[in-house]
Image (cartoon, rainbow, N blue to C red; front, side, top):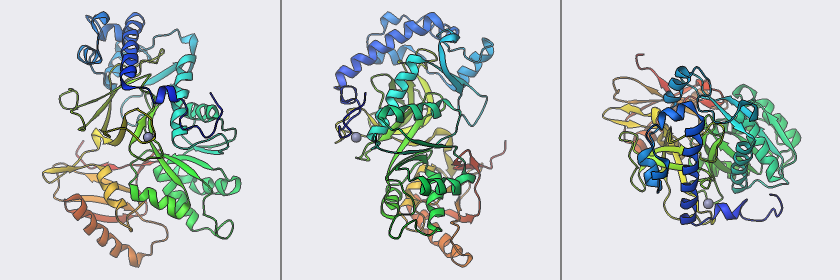
Length: 442
Ligand SMILES: [Zn+2]
């Protein structure tokens, strides 16, 4: 599907589908998924024992009948069935793509795609790119961990949108100078990278002379950023200083290659595949459906998937659902990814999540677009330790005063006492700054 670069949606029939029609499609998809996995996967045959797929007549029936799945359930099934893919439902020879999840904790798990899975996953990413403003005449600078299934699918989706030239690179903090050099030499118009990466690129580019007088230091027209929350004022700074219109993307690269992404309204991130997946939001403590508008954990069933589908998979991501319809015309639900459930940092008798610190920093001219880490202790300490990555151009003489100002700002914004310090380096996992450094006893 290619063509008119001005059309508002990539696949309007799916993206603007009426909610009732979508729910009916989801129910059909879920019922066929139950039959599909029950007949083919040893792991799901066990997990679905005693469930009658014919008795699932509503989406609520599905949630009530089918147990939630965690990553540890998959790991346990890997042991029991002596297989890396106990959730595999197609013959191995039909797989076209498979790889490790990019998980950062615990034992590695794997996912796989057959040709139809790959085609549909690519379609959902093409919708996401289109919503973020990618068009066929863009040149994409794609910074992504290579050799993961996601790296392949991002490239295929951009090509499906019609992009011909993709400047591909790895995604490592130590290579920022090279990325900036390539951007200024080749002039790509659309960047995909991590939030921390664009921050580092912008700081590096500021130290260089302008390529031509009066032009921004980086050539991009748009960027899609991933890997961390981005405050609205921080987004505005990229627009004002670099001329870059930024959309965010977040989601489930490691297990699903499913992502949510912003449209130009910047009112939450659209879930672009609601005709192919079911997303539930649950209370992580009780497992029950979260109340409308409440914060909860995202749970995904990717019923479009044939090779390694997931049934009611707990993502451990806390999201907020945005109310009402989006002015772009898409009817899909919109989420803001708040944080990993595991990123809760206790302080005194309350707790702070990194997204709250990002939001607070974004509201300060000094703190906007600074990378940070929080330090977690047990038991909960009386103050929250906030470590900031020191900008390369900040002189010693000013760092102390700025830390004091930011500490005062964060105390007020967060409602807990903070201890702010600048550091020349912060720990990272891949391209992401570690947002919570654990100093709890093991
Ligand atoms: Zn929208």
